[in-house]
Image (cartoon, rainbow, N blue to C red; front, side, top):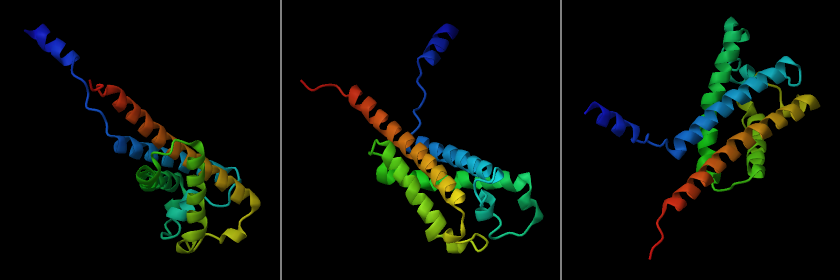
Length: 172
């Protein structure tokens, strides 16, 4: 009887994780990676702005913001905000299976962050006040981020649709 129970457990398949859940996880991981590399760019002086400049210093004046805790919290906040960008990509562009669409999405996000919503962040200089290194480095970071998010979501969607079509039985 016990062997029969074990065999039945072996044949159970796990519930598949939904496509949207996988896309949101991709967004969160992409945000963590993007935030981390944003800190690296700032640390090595490729960029004049750190992620914590946008997220924490704009509204808080606590001393811990400039410590490792502020950096880690900023990276986590970027991961959480990245859930929204992944959701938007999933809803609007998941069917486009192209690296270029992800890169374009990253450029659009860069434009939104550095130009459109920049007035919300009072301690961040205007785009025209940034050095060329900051502009080029952040554009490259956002293109990589958009490519990671976009292509991962599109590939996952198209692969899932391909598998589902393969399971359909041909009609006689």
